[in-house]
Image (cartoon, rainbow, N blue to C red):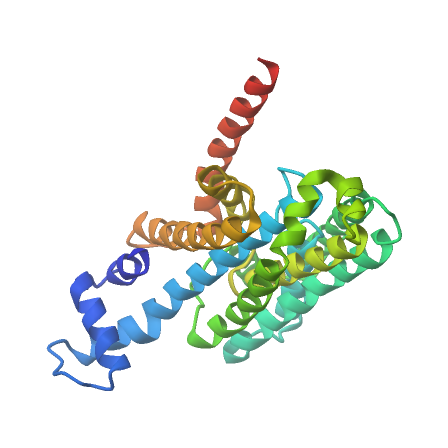
Length: 326
């Protein structure tokens, strides 16, 4: 329903019933007569529908990635960008934008590819360097350090090499949004979500074993270190795919898993699909809110999630620590 509302809303308002009718007409191959104009059909099918579905897929990917990251690190503050993925992706986008590779029509393909390849660099570096340590803290610390390095490189390129137009384009991308969403952009994050999500559900039993602690999981025959590395690899792939098509959207991967855990508990077989559903709905509604703020301009979705997510996060921390003190 949230997708239908997102498709319905815009400069041209289309009733939700018409949205369903247009989609059904297209899927059925024209089984019934159309009472709407061709312009409205193009708006629904070619513009708003891919945007809404991209938002849903990205939201689900970030929420699943956050749930997995929090499970394997046993850290309630972990999110999908744990290994510097967002900073690496931002550097990739800045590089192709400043070099002019992402200009024009080619930018539809080069920017997402550059973002994903940029995300892979800190991810693999963190896993290779930090993976030498038995404790997962080593991987996290290397990821944090690499995120700072790539953020510094991004700022250097923007301040020294970029012009005003390039600076504006990059800052808008970094803030996150779905203005450039096309059907072609939906495919990659959808495939990654399906693959990593299915693998996570298959590994749910081992994810649940981690609640017993490393020693307990090891006693039950689990290679904890190897399992953590594989899950963190999957988390970073999800985050890289999401950032590649939508930019760095914060708080979804951090907060949604907590809401899902509150609703269904920490059992991974229930937590993962519920987190995916809540993440999809959350980001579709956030994108809708970003477009509803003003008719003349579009607010970046990352700004909406930050403005809403930060106060919610503070309240959650307050309630958690107040409960622990009492």
